[in-house]
Amino acid sequence: MKSRIIGTGSYTPEKVLTNYDLEKIVDTNNDWIVARTGIEERRIAADDELTSDLASRAAERALEMAGVSAEDIDVIVVGTITGDYPWPATACIVQANIGAKKAHAYDVSAACSGFLYALASADDFLVAGRGKRALVIGAEIFSRSCIDWTDRNTCVLFGDGAGAVVLEAQEGDKGVLSSHLHSDGNYVDFLYQPGFGVKHQPSLEGLEAKLPFLKMNGNEVYKFAVRMMTEVSKEALKANGYSSEDVGLFIPHQANLRILEATTKRLKLTDEQSFINVNKYGNTSAATIPIALDEANRGGQIKAGDLVLMAAFGGGFTWGGTLVRW
Ligand code: UT7
Image (cartoon, rainbow, N blue to C red; front, side, top):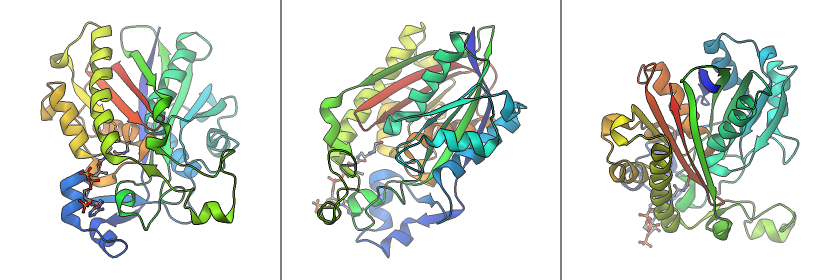
C-alpha cells in the first residue's frame, strides 16, 4: 500500500511586489536582490485574504484535478507557521471552507519544512490503513505575520502562497516511497519569530524590540540549508537504492537560487532535473514545494513513472527529504 499523489493545486495572490517596488520601501536594489537570491518578484495577499483562504483555493484545485469530492477526504494536514490564529488550527478552517465533513484536521509547525512533515504524517496515516484519502497543504502569509518591512536583510526574501496535494491509498509501486525527517533544536535562534508566545508575551516593550518579527542569521542558514538538503536527498535516494541519474525531477524548497544551485550541483543533478520558480514567488516557506510541484505537474514536467525527489530546510532547524514514484 502506498500514498499516491492523484491531484495537485496551488494558489498565489494576485498582487505582485517586484524588486523595483521594494526599492521604494527599503534601501535595496533589484541588482542586489537578483544577484544574492535570484528573486525577481513575490506575491502579497490582499488585506482581506487569510492563510486559510489561500489554502482552501489550492485545495479545491487539487481536489478538482484528482476528481475527488471534499467529502471523500479523511484527513487534512496543513503545514504553516503563519496560520489565521495562534490556535485553532488553520486546517480546521480549511475543512469548514471546503466542506470536508468527515475529515479530521490539524496543522504541522515545521517552518519551511512544513509541507514535507505534513506529507509524511498523512502518508503514515494512509499506509497504516486508517483512511483512504488525505489533503496535504502548505500555506503561508508571511507578509502580514512576521515580516519587518523596514529590515532589508529579510523583507526581500519572502512571499505569500499555498499549494496542495490529494493523496490516495493505492496498491502498486507508485506513490510516496519514503520520507526522511530531521530536526536540531540547538539552532532555534538562527531562524525564528521571538514573540509573541509564552516566552515573550505581548507587551509594548516587546513590540518596540520588534519581537514579533522574523530574525535570521542568513549566512549560517545558507550553509546549513545547502548541507542538510544535500545530505537528506542522498539519504532518501540511498534508502530506495537509487542515485542522482534516476531522478526525473528534483523539487527543492525554493528559498534562494544560490542555495538551490549549490544543492543541485552537490547532488550532481543537471539543471534540467531541477525545478526552479523562486524568481516568481520568493520564499513562501511551507508553500514552496507544493506550489512548485503543481506548476511542474501542470506544465508537463513530471511524467507517470518519474522519480520525484523533494527536499526542504527551515527554522527549528528542521529538514526533510521525500522520494515519490509518480
Ligand atoms: O528557508 C530558509 C530561509 N532563509 C534563507 O533562505 C536565507 C539564507 N541566506 C541567504 O540567502 C543569504 O545569507 C542572504 C540572501 C540573506 C544574504 O546574502 P549574503 O551574501 O549572505 O549577504 P550578507 O548578509 O553577507 O550581506 C552583504 C551585504 C551587507 O552589507 P555590508 O555589511 O557588506 O555593507 C548587507 O547589509 O549586503 C547588505 N544587504 C543588502 N543590500 C541591499 C543585506 N540585505 C540587502 C538588501 N539590499 N536587501
